[in-house]
Image 1: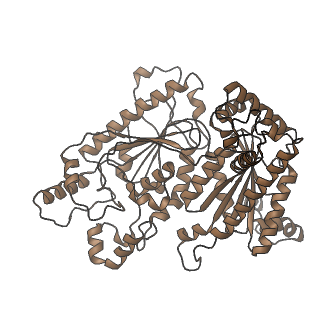
Image 2 (image 1 turned 60 degrees about the vertical axis):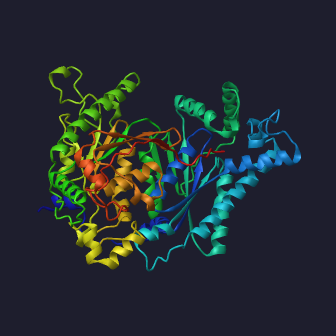
Image 3 (image 1 turned 90 degrees about the vertical axis):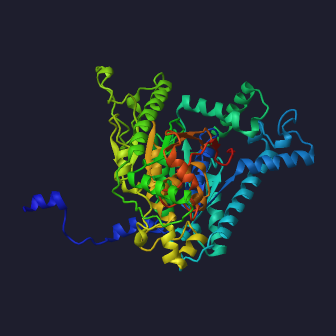
Length: 581
């Protein structure tokens, strides 16, 4: 190989040596790469920029990962303090007539720098909230011995406090850093600090944000809509007069423009800090449905359920001799579910597009590297080819044949098959039922009953291990602008459903995932999700047999042969409600 060709293909082959100049430049990165178990995320931004939306999404995502996380919202502290002060002093600086004193509602005059009494109160509540955040980090970290615990348990030592306020001046941000430094010196522990600034310079988007804020923020409860909007605009103007965007590249910060249309990351190298960057890139406030379902029923599963039903009917409990194989294909009911799923998604997608077409072209709903679907040529006649989808849709599937077959429809969407969605790896116990495991390995089975979430199968995985490979799936699904469909398996779907429900992740093993039923999640304005269930196949003899068949252990549900019963549910799962200052 010629030297020129070698240079273009491999570059220099000389051993990399740090020069004095390079070492000096890397020193900052070396300092920032340290993996602190304690992280303070400081939100920065003017009112109505989506800070509280980001804080709620962060809380749900990090808690789902197994980290300890808590929001310290200065606006909440301010309202409580203002309400108490007004009650004690009978001072009506909160609003002109004092009608909203009881909830601590404050009008725009409260945020005027010339109002010295209010300025002192704002600084006092900010100090109180920060002290509470640092004290919580001190007490929460170190709960698990990192030397003799699993990786998932060690995650509980990674604590994140979210300091939700405007933090709009350089002076305020310098005070936060200095306070953290002094607290670290006292505790002899290190706390990482990352600033997250939400910037909105899109006037139309800002108007929408303001209209949403006045309907959800306690400061405007019971206030006429026009009056509330005018008051909020005055408040923003007072903040704008002293607002200083982050421009110090010595800080660790993330800047989010217009709710994820652009993200700037500076000096964010720590392990936990890097986790949140992809999540920030995926989150947005748009509306799109997300569908989760199990792979359809295979022939082996049907025989298994029928055999259990026969044993139950004769009251002769016998071991199940039908094994589920990873290469099993769909049976008749599984194929019927596949076709019903295709029809369901087609109708749902068309309904979604009917709501969107007046606002945006479907091609604009393709996002990043995630190909959302095949879009029709505007010049072609759709009536000539019913296989051409009329809406964008991300279809994700595990690599298991039954899942791929379930996602293979007459609508020719490309299937993104990823092993991340494969079922829980049972390792040395693969192919065994819980009854067999209990009989042959009673000690391990006892551990499973005590802690089904963290107990790892020998040579395989635990439920907590699934989170590691599902983080990218969550980000990929969240970032979609159009419908997204995930076809997977019970254990994986339990973990995903826990994310959308904001269910404590250790309780995910109790989540029922019915067979031939679609979970539908639609986003709420506050960051949570509205959930509904859609059973696509009617109950029949197979389901009845499953109802009659005794289950050796209801929690957790490890395989695809259990939990085939439908659930009727239409419930909104909201993230904790906080409003920014």
